[in-house]
Image (cartoon, rainbow, N blue to C red; front, side):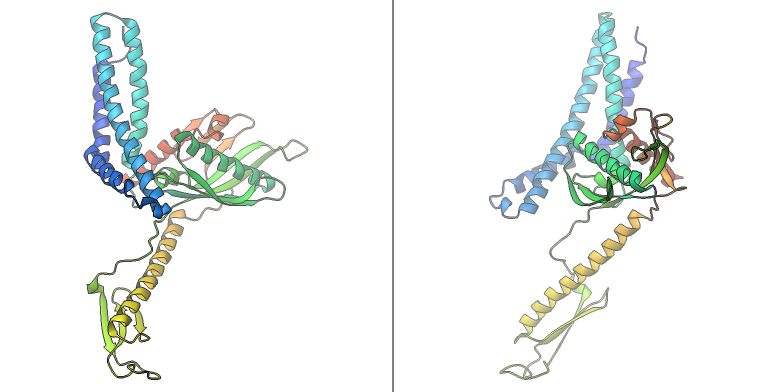
Length: 369
């Protein structure tokens, strides 16, 4: 006899898949894949390696996402057929196999459903993670290195490209700080719930008396802002005045209204250009300078936004969001979600999906309250 209500379970699986498809939208994904495929076949694609990598990575991610959604739909159909056959033939082995598959499908769908909760402005971006040793001396530095390894192993488990950008090693062991990128869509949305103070409790391997030590490390997660080489400025945002050039005269300087003063109305940024001989040349030069200045302003605003997103993380007593206890018992526990695991080694080896998913659901609950 089956121990679960198969019709209800399968109905629930289909409902979850429908909610995922409503967000992922296979039709939109197919159109995106077609567009990216066309870009990927351009003969000059690799003339710009950075753009080529962006295109091929986006194409691979879109194809994988579409394939995953389609495959889940097929698996639900298959398990429904297996249940029907098992009931018709009174075959308990088939029903047991179907029960196992239903559990596996539920876990994978729950994991994919988390993606539908990532709707923040920067959630779809790649992530930049910085880990800093906090209070606790050499143990804290060692803990910072353990956390970096944990996140890099998490990325490796999923096949996400990760690149270490900077490391500052402590004198005795471990890291003062480290920064690395995780280059996959929605890396920021997932990892942003890992930001905060992490606490480690263990018998210190650096204490010759074998005493228990508590140490802290701060995890900062910010989105990787997409940089552009130019900035488009709507014409209605520009005020352009022309005037006669001043200064030492040449053959045509001072004789015509060739100088240009360009004002960007929203920001009040002003650029004057009079070095060129014609008004057209001065206008083009002024526009290039204006674009550069506005790009700098945008980057400064993005840097301020990233700092705001990163928050103020102290890495000391009283503000920790997760504890890793290795002595006197073994337990990793998130203090916000109450999610916990007794397999500490598995967690440090990168098995943190359950913590991340619980964090995302908790954060959405906080937003809805």
